[in-house]
Length: 496
Ligand SMILES: Nc1ncnc2c1ncn2[C@@H]1O[C@H](COP(=O)(O)OP(=O)(O)OP(=O)(O)O)[C@@H](O)[C@H]1O
Ligand SMILES: [Mg+2]
Image 1 (cartoon, rainbow, N blue to C red):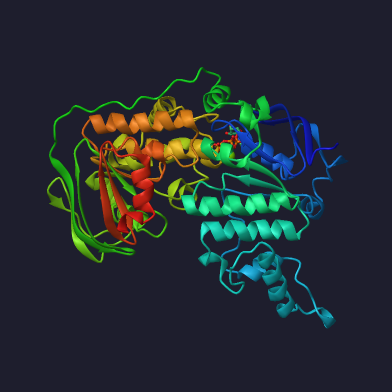
Image 2 (cartoon, rainbow, N blue to C red; image 1 turned 90 degrees about the vertical axis):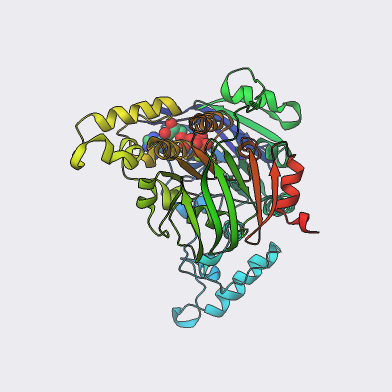
């Protein structure tokens, strides 16, 4: 029998980087097939080849036994395969219905667009998926979850029965992930084939039957999920033996309060008071809409507070709206959305990584030649940033490596307080250790850390975890909390 897709000998080179090295991949019809690998392993590159967006240097692809269409025949590719990306392809200014039928609006007599047919068609598509989204809504107002479902509906409407999900769960909370997986299972039962990419290995076991591991552009293992333990999976990804990560006990005595937040009110949160001590990591957990992101963004100066005060080492901070002033005051920041608020894609790794310390590399705004490059190289070594060099544009880096640039930049200014939002989103298991170790090193030097995350690996590094629900603090978990406690509190169950 033919595979839903059979790719063989796929090779792709970017300059010096061999991103894919003779990769073979067969995805069985109606499969849920997972693709895993460390940051930069070649997953997204393989997806770009499988969706016809990137021409491989060598190799062939067949869908259901039929050779892939020529690369410039986009319409033919769209009838075969679609990918829901980390980054949205939905156009925010258009309605849901318009997005679904973009460039193929049904027309009535005389060639005018039949808007009633557009909306009816859109409603039928979403109803077929049992998705209750109003088709007249502006796409910009959709949640990540809704946006993904609209993209899946659009792919199916083109006729595609092979759908690739590239880190679909990275920005979803547990309940939304469960709903997404329920849709995936229902569609699978209806004959749709899925290729699924995630750095959350538990999800692989939950949703996939088969897993393929890419390492350094090579396919190193493929087989049934049931037959490979999580430790073996990590070993295949890293090429090393798995070893258990042991949380280090902290025996430092209490330190002085560093940050005092008093009765802070802002966009989506009310009356928040909390203290972060020097050398302490305080976790902030909560589902989407809990206010946790807005709280962190207010501390970082990205948003203004409505009322309340923030003091840093005894000094009252002027009310926000100025990230630069907060950096100067000693606050390092890793924003949530690296594409929008984070890196400057067209600038080099060196420019991005040293942005917060330009004033320190040279006096009077003149940076000595080489200083930026040397500083960037040190950061690349320390964080294991994979790039062809400091001059490579950040947009050429894999998602996880861009995240490392952001954290390196936040740490470069020796901040007194680090505000981190989902700092390890899209980062592979090994790189996650590197990033969290770097945060811990700063903490040991006395930096206070406010860490917004729902990732258990991130939260495990926290001395305390404060849980927000609907804009208010509903629980504070002291060290020694169990994962169950966090989940119960973030979902609001502690209120019952
Ligand atoms: N357009 C490009 N130009 C230059 N190099 C690129 C380009 N796209 C990808 N690469 C390189 O190819 C390699 C594979 O990148 P890819 O994005 O496929 O990794 P990935 O497995 O998706 O990683 P992640 O988990 O971080 O998303 C990386 O070393 C990356 O820097
Ligand atoms: Mg990727």
